[in-house]
Length: 363
Ligand code: FE2
Image (cartoon, rainbow, N blue to C red):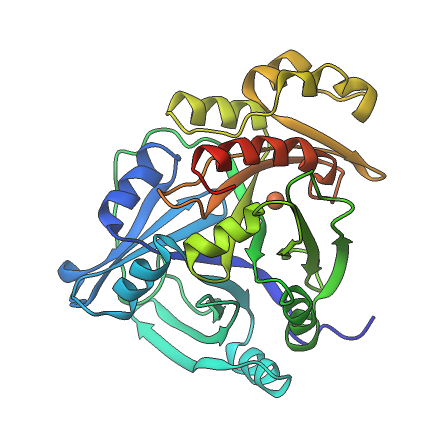
């Protein structure tokens, strides 16, 4: 394997452009178990936008809204609805990382800038990614503050967290014919390797199909599946996303937990909707996946899915879309050895997804 020319330390944060960041922050705090840690806006001297930084375990979300008309952020929300604008990766040297990416063919949206306050300095730059999404490469080891210069710490009476620990993977949907382009881009520009490739034979129902390539960085910490629709009898869930998002973009963010039953129970108690598979899924579960530590009755009650590969098994569950448009959703995942993505569950899930899609008149 070639030298990792763009070493990434970790997922740093995900920034969402939303219609009303204050209300979104309330939702992620009171329902999803995040703690608000920092904020920028009018009170901090920022006149055109408001941002809230939300933290749970190592998962960090930034929720941003425009404060003025005809702003890039409000245009983004008008076109795409609430969605992910920025995937940020922490690097040890932003200058070197952006220069390497540029030399290897990345489109630079913003070259490296330094942001400084009494707590130190942060450096970051932006690369163009699928649709209007951008990748931020951020250097923060010389910063001691809460998040970044310009933000002020905030506190709140948050309820208990729900046990979300870290981002496991982030999935992008792209148009037919673009998956190979972006898979190649991650190899060429970011030094990622292709971990797996699912074809329409792996992931299809009578009606719809998708293809997927999973890209992984040198350390294996960052996993980014890329989906494109495949020809089916009716409109696939990927096409439904692309239609309503008006472009390629982030489809789901998977977050890990050490206790999926506890996490899902807490979220269900706070009225988060999850996709349900038919109860028949659980009848032959033990035959399909072999021995597992969890009680199948509890998994069935909570709608948690199981898949096994040669390395072990995983437990996963998917939320309904997080906004009115059928676009972004979340996955909660607990891994017991498996490094996969639950391909054995895709068919059962597709049937469930298609039922929801039909209800929306989009199948
Ligand atoms: Fe996933």
